[in-house]
Length: 91
Image 1 (cartoon, rainbow, N blue to C red):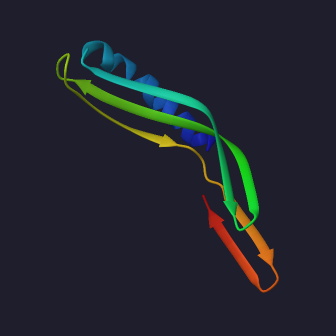
Image 2: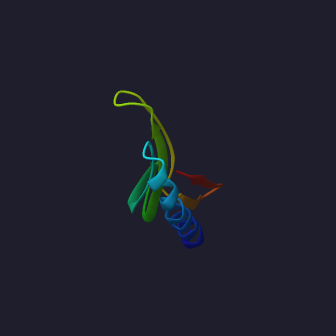
């Protein structure tokens, strides 16, 4: 996770000189904290994750632009055992 975040950050910083020459192009990076909660048949799970979002776009004019991005909010893994039943799930 930390390696992925570092790679995203380095890639975003390396793209800054290109942004200076192309004023209609933009990129951004957000980081924060994501909290996930899951409830399944009386079992409750909660965990906090470092989340990040990388996005970029192009402004065609003042009224039209296109933007795309990727957001990673973490994965909540829960394992539980009840008599006669074993299960795993992700949220």
